[in-house]
Length: 229
Image (cartoon, rainbow, N blue to C red; front, side):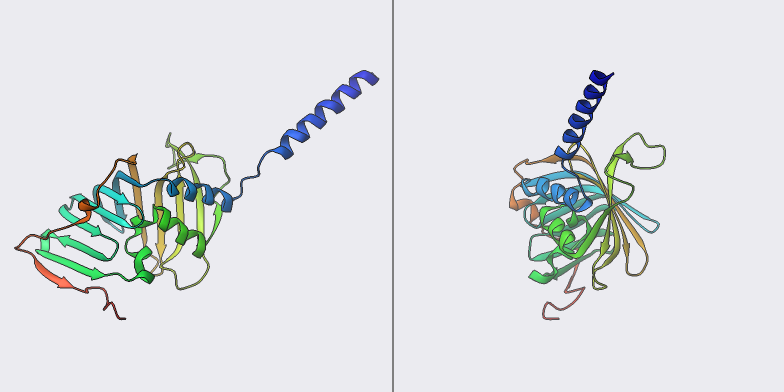
C-alpha cells in the first residue's frame, strides 16, 4: 500500500511538472504569434470575398510587404483597388470612374480593411485593440456546422477614434494565417473579409502595384480628403 501511494505521488509530481512547463497561451500572446508569422512573409496572394451589408465582392488579392496591396475583382467585374504605399486608387468600371487619394504616413494602415491581414496591419491592431479569445484557444468551427476549424480572437478598440468598434479574427491554427476578418464599424455596420487559397513568398514585383486607368475613365483626385487635412 505504501509503495502504491509513493508511485501515485510520483506520477502526480510528473504531471504537475509537465503542466507548469507548458507555455500558457493568452489571447495577447496568440495575436503576437500571428503577427510573427506575417512578419516573415514578404508577399502573398489569395482569393478574397468581401461582404459589406448586402453587397458581395470577389477577387484576387496581392500583397507586398510592407504596405503594397492590390485587389482585382471578378465581382464586380474589372473593378480594381490598388495601394502602392502612397497612393490609393479605385477603378469603378460601372461608373467609368477612377478615384485616387494620396495617403500620408498617419493614414496608411487604414487604407483598406484587407490591409489588416499583413505585418503592418497586425502591428496596428496590437497597438490599438485589446485581444481576447471568443471561446478559448481551442479551434472551433468557422461557421455553424462547418468542418473548417479556426481560433477566434475578439479585438476591442482602446479608443473611440478607431474605425472598427470590434474585430473578430478567425485564424488557421496550423499556419497561423488569417482566414477571416469580421469588423463592426462606428456606424454599426458589418464588413467581412474571407481569405482562401493563400500562397506566400511568390516573389511578387512592385510593378504589379502600378495601375494605369483606362483612357475612357473620368479621374477624381482626393475623393476622401485633401492630403493636408
